[in-house]
Image (cartoon, rainbow, N blue to C red; front, side, top):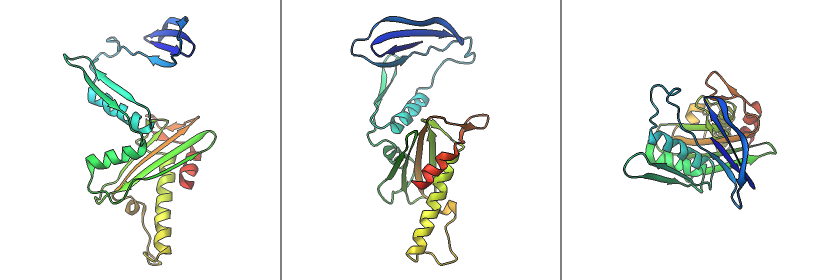
Length: 224
């Protein structure tokens, strides 16, 4: 069921893929605005279980709060005798995401979070990185707030640029010999990074749609 409030309030309802109540004007909103969506699971479709795992939903909503700095998301579980409520708000956005991951997963951090952003008329990119003293690499990428576990063009641009920058720096300051260079895995050892891109016409590859295929995002992230 979906309700929309701008100045007037409209509502519509869908059941099992079909319109159960058409788009209908139901009144005035006053000063309120926004979009409200209510989802009720259908036991005829969700045949195995309609029990939702609170921590799974909480973790997904936490990702959304990290990826959209300044937005507050409240998650409430009212199924038990006592309400369980978590408020998620991260003014630091993806910077806070990196700090969160390093705090729960890895060793001592080696520097403050490095943050970069770039924006054109129809697309934008944010990156936050921080190295720690472990050997682990944690790289998470998102396109339009959707996780892309298989990576894609935004990850390709990031990895190429990071390796190139570290090699250029090492050679400029004589930290590397003429015949030495970092490989990609060397450059990312101990790295925690978040890549978040937003674009109008996202193209996802593969059957599971978990890999971003827009080549212009590789150029945007690489240049940034």
